[in-house]
Image 1 (cartoon, rainbow, N blue to C red):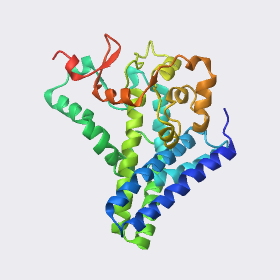
Image 2 (image 1 turned 30 degrees about the horizontal axis):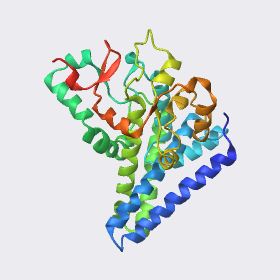
Image 3 (image 1 turned 90 degrees about the vertical axis):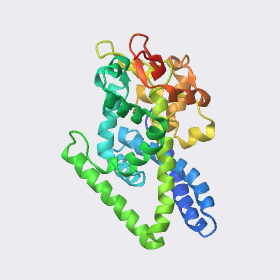
Length: 313
């Protein structure tokens, strides 16, 4: 399905405008109670996730037909979500091309070892892996580190264009932060922005985690790896309540997105309903998704994700 200009513009309006208004409300709430400010940070974080989905679609070239329009809006959304557009887009494209391939892990995915690899680690290496996969670190500290610090630097073999856009994004963030701080004060800016980016980041990383770390997920060695199988069975159908589905830009239909990343987020649900191959996809409920947190390693012998307690050390 092709981008619909009207739907895209409406999504921009119903995402960016409420987000801005909520930030303004958070500022005025500072004079009443910071608990009220933190309460408002919850929906603001939700809108940040929604803006990130727009950023994500722009990176896939699926939000507008115009490449230039995607780049401009993607850059703006990247400044708001603290994510460099071109650099992230390149890494994310690699993720799509290698998702579920055990021999091509390490780019745009969550660090996941096989049982055999884990057993071959030293004690120090195991400690590092345990620390990374600890839910508190991975889902709470990790998102803050990634959006505020990790995204400020170029990683891997980045092109000159990617490097320039990382620097441009950093300058954009600095300019916006400076302008807002000059208007309301740096303390107020931090009291507003930090909880929003924290909550939005946590929600975003959680969504990414359950999209590829669930019971029945597809992983294969490169020789047996199949793109279509990886897309349909290596990406979850995360069935969320309608309000959360709206805030997350239908990204729960991740199996559809991975099969065809050029489909705009607002068409994903209809594609899921209309395409016969998706009818037998088992949905992942919110309750079942919480069980995914126990997954730590990939068991190649049994083709499933397991916890440490399933490993004979």
